Each structure stands twice: as structure tokens, then as C-alpha cells.
Image (cartoon, rainbow, N blue to C red; front, top):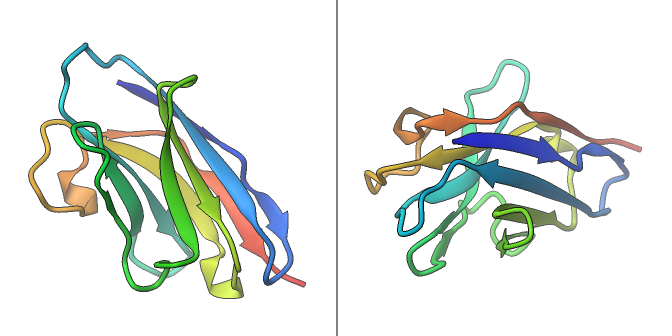
Length: 124
């Protein structure tokens, strides 16, 4: 599985960005979870959203719930992450990742494949 993230940039507080993750290497019928993590300097890697290939169920931690939305991108066989009402605390490198098979635990140690990150900076 190969993953390619894009869409990061500089945005003012309160602004929006949309990240994309293009994926390849899946086999028809694969059951996997694809999601986004972020890592800020000096902080642990944090999961911010994921979606299931099986039933499109989603997960968001409280830190982003109501502001971030993950969706499948059939054109790129991947996902998009729409981020609204961005805050300076959202500044980080954002990475997409896949868990296959899915262990049921959305954590960095559960993910099997990682893409290169894209920088998101929220600053005035």
C-alpha cells in the first residue's frame, strides 16, 4: 500500500483547509481503516480521524470533533480531510495511514502503512 498526502499550507485562525490522501495497492474486498494523524514538535503523534472501508464508519477525538470531517475519495481511492475553524493548536505535520488488518484500536502502533506528511500551519 502506498499513500500520498497533499493539501497542507498556511491558514489564519478560523480558516479552513482540505487535505487529500491518495492510496494505491489495495485488493478488491480488502477490509482496512484509513486515517489521519498529526504530529507537532515536542508532542506525541495523535490520531485525528479515521474511516472504515467496510461501512464508512468514522471516528474523531474530542479535540477535532465538529470541526474536522473525513470522507472517502473514490477518484483517488483514498480519503479527504476537511478541517474547519482551525486553531493554532492544529499546527502540525499531518500524515495519512492505513491499518490492514484492523485491530480495533486507532493508534499509531496499529497502523501498518504510512504516507509522507504534509505541513499545516495555523497562524495570523
